Image 1 (tube, rainbow, N blue to C red):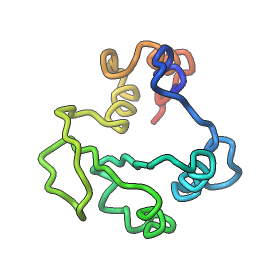
Image 2 (cartoon, rainbow, N blue to C red):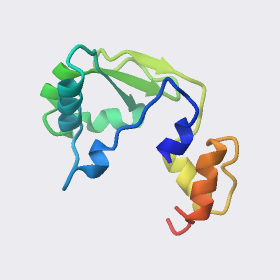
Image 3 (cartoon, rainbow, N blue to C red):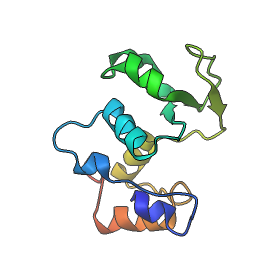
Image 4 (spheres, helix red, strand yellow):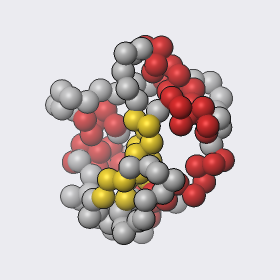
Amino acid sequence: MVEAAIAGESRFSMDTCEAEREGASFAVDTVRLMQQRFPQAEFFYFIGEDNVPALHTWREIDELKKLASFVVLARGDLEPIEGFPVIRRNIDISSTDIRNRIARGLSVRYLLPDAVCAILARHQLYLND
């Protein structure tokens, strides 16, 4: 779905390292791998505001904070958290909302790229969630 969503956009690329990794995949491992591949790059880790309260439970979170700068994507009137920069967008939709809409038989048109909607429909994803 990511590949379909970014098709035709030359500024984006997709990496499948997490899908190819055996066992559990942890953010810290992915960032380490990306640093090996791109040693001169500066890394930013975008996280939804709903994930911030559990951030302390992430594997090697203190190390991950050293390897990448966290940026919080806020949907509401979130106060700054733990000194993380916050990007606010007036978009009141989440992946959970999208999955729930599909499960209830509601449209997700205009919420996702058409190519992603087609994949969801073709494979009947999230219908039984």
